[in-house]
Image 1: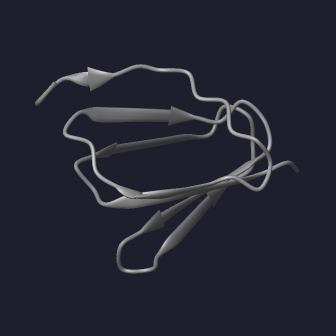
Image 2: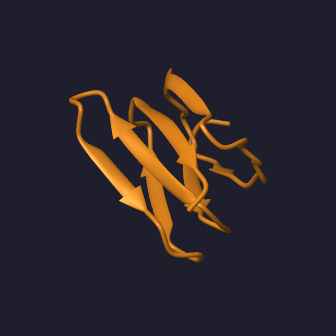
Length: 69
């Protein structure tokens, strides 16, 4: 939904890599457990490790990598 907000629960297995993609919504990514790495199209990586850490994004090309901590 363009200009909408996306709320979904995603459970990733350890070692999962989600390929580059883009969403048109505002996405709130809240870490429950493990380590989540946001990878941007320019190669920049942002790793979050603490439960409750949050990444908010809108319309960026990105990928994800998940590991158990």
